[in-house]
Length: 92
Image (cartoon, rainbow, N blue to C red):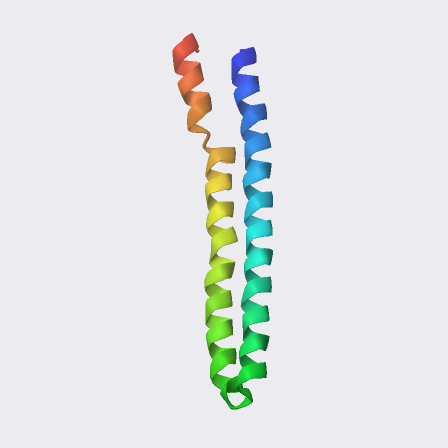
């Protein structure tokens, strides 16, 4: 039974790492998107409206990444396939 507890503990640890990495990647992506937006405005100020639309669209795609990671993390948290495999292996 201790093996199942270890699987749950390790799953929680990995889920935390997944969520932290997704948050960091999203923040880093937003930083790059916004810096390139400002760079584009500095080069061609008349393109501001078009660049803003493209920045917001790309930012929306960037925000989808943490939501997908959250969904995967919740799957591993609440429907842990590894725990079931360990239970079947030790005969529980």
